[in-house]
Image 1: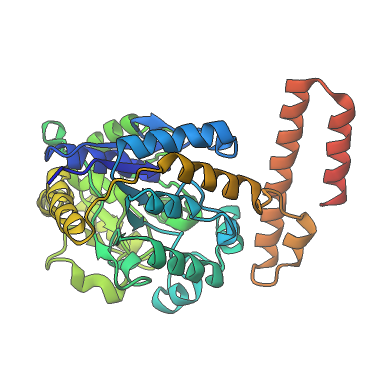
Image 2: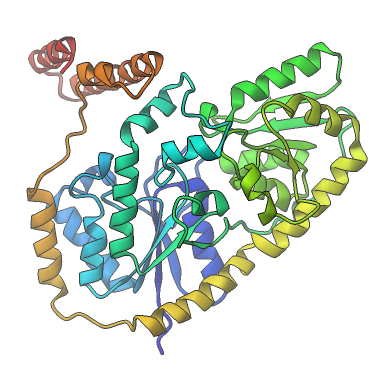
Length: 434
């Protein structure tokens, strides 16, 4: 049986598409990652996709012709090429295209694309949905419960296999197989030495969702009490620079509002650093006893951080447990071993079948997707202000964000085209709130 070639993509996802490609390559299975170029920490990938050109027929045909030629299995992490706001057409139509080309589809749920607000509110007392933050407002606007359930239904209908990051994500789609986050071993960079003045790091991708305000509050209160330590908020930094900073740290604080640990914790564990993180009460049994990190909450963070700062021997013990957990669970070779076995099962259940008329199939989908109903990227500002599910502050923040984006786009257009008449027309439309 021919070894399948595996695609990984299609957005940053904290470097996981590239990590999963490395995991498979470590077991002799060809795999490469395709991602857009925009992400907060400059995560690496093998090939860059220009999402702004996906509606260009020539770009569309060339991309899918190459993908069809080079890969047999497509592993999508949280998004596809055509994941759309509110799961409207042509959401996931590329997955149907790939199935018609005889490809196997793996969809890996990783976070906000599957989390259902009403269920999260019931399961998680520290949820982020009421935070007065533009990121949260955007999630609540883009991903209401009915959209999330539509996404799950669409993926159930098209994917040959569904994965979830962790038990928290699995709680929204129980049939998903847990395939944990993967990270390359950094054994040569592990240091057991500790700073005389402990360094605490926190690296939020989105502050409100990670509970950063509560972290900053706990840090300030401890400093006011005279506790001697340094604190670094890791933002606007490349992934490699961030890893170098974690190497020098003594304590890592992950998220306080989601209910399970993320990639930051995995990276810290790989370096033997102790982690503070909120684990949802109903999910604690998934971890060993004692656990590989120090569980905390918004209510107990100040006390727990104080304890770790003042007790270097406990930091070393938790860091050692975390490192062992990383080796057994998150090392790319361990994740790759599972993926290799599951690929064998997948291709036995769904044998790969070459399709001869691939060019006409790609042509048909290109015409259908690009000439069919296209979702507007613009949202009426007045519509946002009338939304009832969001708090007033969230509505105002979301309106402000959308307005800033449109003004920036108008300025960019004027600089590029030098067309003052069109620029004034754009600004007049902005003033109308449409």
